[in-house]
Amino acid sequence: MVWGIAVLVVLAALGGGIAAVQAGQRGANAPERLSLTGSTAMAPLIQEAAKNYSAAHPNVTTTVTEGGSAEGFTAVSDGRASFGMSDIFAEEKDGVVPNNLVDHKIAVVGIVPIVNKRLGVKTITTTALRLIFAGQYTNWRQVGGPDMPITIINRAEGSGTRTSFDRQVLHGTEPKTGLEQESSAKARAMVASTPGAISYLALSDLDDSVAPVYIDGIKPSAANIETGTWPLWAYEHLYVKGKPTLAEVRFIQYLQSAKVQKSLVTKMGYLPIKNMKVERTADGQLNDVRP
Image (cartoon, rainbow, N blue to C red):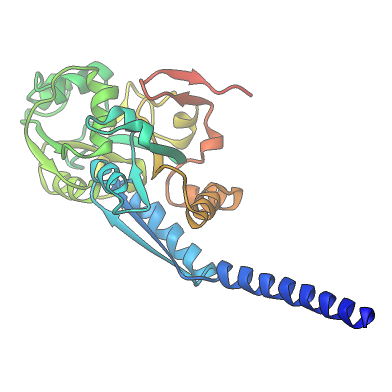
């Protein structure tokens, strides 16, 4: 009788263990939804990564929506998105409570001034760039170009690219008001079709429809961004509200994995975080990365 009871106990234990394993397997394959909203500069990278991730994890559905970094902060703060995509630190955006959000840096992106290809201006000084966007230079002949009015095309107020550009170029000087575009693609298209136009965009969005402008003779290249020689760049952030879910943790780990950083990130025109020899703080300080 005792022997029979022992067998039943063992079988019950095995059954419980099998049930637990099966439950774990069902949990691992349970449908998951991840929504990401925000930066138009970051969106192409995240869209491609999300497509690859969902292909490898069919139970995970990802939705990526552009809207600017400001919308990313609002959406994740309100609980409308799993992640807020941003080109700036939460501390840089008015109205955002940084303590409620957790930052996960995914990549680095260069920011490059662009002009209409027919303009013929190849390089510009840091001072001249600031004076143009402050509205103090109004004709290209003031910087050695043709006698042609300067048409400034800014990104919209909620753009993280604009915030980074204004902070790193204008240094507190009031920007000139003018034409605004809500995305890098639209700014690029307007520059391409407008003689004398100048704007800026993420290096990952640069194509041959416009001409990049060197600053102080320095080329906007990955090598120069990594060392801080090229001055205009920003982190690409994913922000979550509070403690992330397991599905969110796994997606972040995927994006920060060596495989994605060394392949997709560089292929899409961004820079891996670990390649940087310098780092930038939320208040704009630039420091060498310690070995």
